[in-house]
Image 1 (cartoon, rainbow, N blue to C red):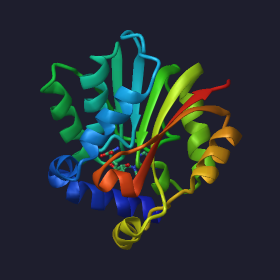
Image 2: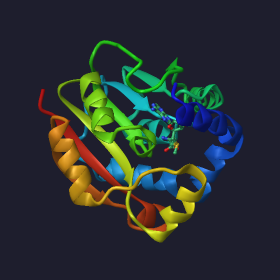
Image 3: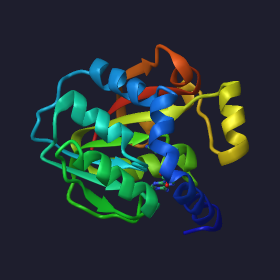
Length: 207
Ligand SMILES: C[S@@+](CC[C@H](N)C(=O)[O-])C[C@H]1O[C@@H](n2cnc3c(N)ncnc32)[C@H](O)[C@@H]1O
């Protein structure tokens, strides 16, 4: 792990006990539910899913609420404290995910049908490399459900804490194309903090 990533991971360990409640209080869990409900087509329940930068697994919980438990679900995050809370949250829904304590790019596994990635590429050293690593995790035709930060003064405040990146719509669409994806859908969150800080994108792997 490089210096900034190791430093961020220690900080994510520290905020993990309050992260899940914060995601719900600020409307991100509801936002993820709305995004996944709006994103068609409805996937086969027998899908294999990996959540990259899963944190306390709010995005995976929303996936399970909308689509039911997948055939298998992997939570990947470098923060052990985040992973432990994500596992507990999903076990409360009767789902037993596979935890992987690692960075994106350090995990090799058979290709999956779905990659979930909410608010993580903005923390990766190179977003194009990160999107390519996500594509490498997918089978050809597999789908990436991406939630990504966009420029807004709310993100300027969050930046003071996390030094994360934001992406204009054209920029992230261009990066997705370069990484081997076709963009299928762009979702504007309708209300609350998610509407100001983030956008959702569904992209299909061309490879
Ligand atoms: C802003 S949080 C988002 C957590 C969760 N996806 C959510 O929406 O609540 C970012 C998460 O990504 C993880 N992370 C940071 N850099 C990463 C990397 N290079 N690979 C995988 N996960 C990373 C952090 O440990 C943290 O849990």
